Image (cartoon, rainbow, N blue to C red):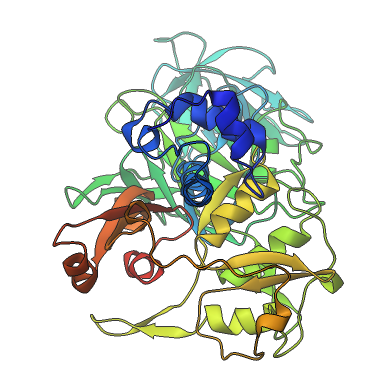
Length: 496
């Protein structure tokens, strides 16, 4: 162990691609950790400092990717960051609108008592409502008056002037279109903003721990059941939850169902370029005993450029994901397609890497899985460097800028194409006859994003090498890794 000061240590630890300030912060936080303290070399040991730099780079990069994007519950925040979603990921949303007062289309029928029809109105006995119109109402009603709901069914109800008064009769003629106005918290309208870009779709919606099964008549966007997979239990939720969404296409219109329900959300509220969903919660003390539940969404992320077809389509192919982020002008580096190496057979070609990443790898359980996929959600607050470092963990290789081109090198065996001799060396060779024991390991363990655990962080089955363990005197020595962009445990074992 050394007695060097933090300043002296920092001056000796110059890590490419890692700023000195980051090294300083990491050492300040972890210097007293035994695995750090015992590895700090003495001042004059050049070889030991080389090994320590390698060790420290590994630790800092691991710390960068240790934070799982994973699942987040939906939340409100005045100035929230935007999500960038690739592949398939379960995420929360930012609640950007919430309202219990709304306008809902309705029709009135001449009858004694009069009948008001409004599909899935959700109003309970004794609730209050008002009526607005663009024309004239039937005799027996006055626009802007407060009425009490009586004898409600799913789609109809009567009205009275008091909670227990006589039902009102409707007569005469009417014109224009009518809406009922409610503000008694019997329904809640919520907008969830999911991503700062166009998405490919939403596969699942979860409220707390229950999966929403849609298909109620007449509009299948209303829920039919809530399903709890832990208990294998279904609950009747017909017409208690509604969901529609905009995929975030630039220039999209405001969600019409919400525009029709309230004057607080107009045709100007488009959230253009941001994927968002609109939910209606109908008050129900059994389904929602704790009020607004935690909502999460299983989202298919961005459509990606296809180097084989030159078109775009949804994919989790790691090479296509990385290329998209490099070319992203909003969150990525904003490089052009011509800045990427795409030549067939060229070293670092994205075209070749796309094919490699999609190769089917046989599984012991049968079938195959793609070699390298990326399924992850990132924050717009993360730097492009941080995001690219996380992405690189999913390919077991590197992303480089060489000779004016961005290149990608997913892990695979590559046939040698050049012979190097002493004449190619700029400086005399240094030979290190044996790796330091502190740098060796015979097993790899770590974490990944597990779809079976709700896209939360989980341990993948550790990879062990018994032969190397024998060489290490029978002691199991672990290397800890994180694969935040990988959702397959078997892929993690291959990467390990």
